Length: 231
Image 1 (cartoon, helix red, strand yellow):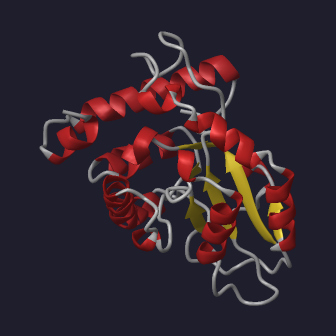
Image 2 (image 1 turned 45 degrees about the horizontal axis):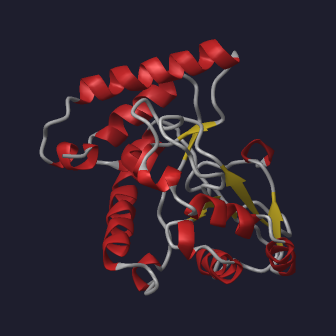
Image 3 (image 1 turned 120 degrees about the horizontal axis):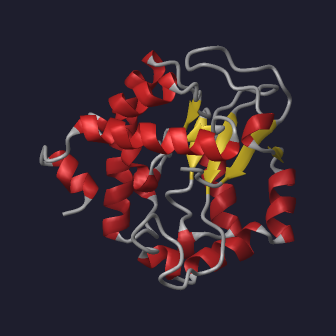
């Protein structure tokens, strides 16, 4: 039984989840001398019911302000995804909607839009990245900007036993799909396409985040960032 299934079955002690979060955040601060710019969970477990509450409490206690809300517009109509992958993405989106309240009450922030569930691994292409961003930012008033996160996992395939989170690398970490993402994300055609679409690439700390519910900033460009998970 995986973590997600154990949470659904009520077999996970949320106090232990909080303890693990506190330990990881404290270790991060010890090693790097400050807080992470943001925190999210592997396989988006940070938005699971119950987990999202203790997650938000821990981040607030450690002064971490930003997280990921993996709610991708139009994910249910992405027919290129295999049925299990599409079902997982829809379940993540459902949990993310419910997690927005607990996150907001603890003062957490996130980008206006999120994409990446539809472009993960072998499904990533210049066309699909551009299309996903277009769906996410559809309806943006002229002269306004929105922020969007593009989730990605670029890199080289891990070779066991190196890598992973304490138990060695998982199947995705060992696959060619990470290298495929790296190739797509570094293609000059992607940067040119994004520039043509008015998208400006930047890092998380470059963005002037706004709290959920505040007005859209009056900038002329759309902004997005490519970022790896830090915890």
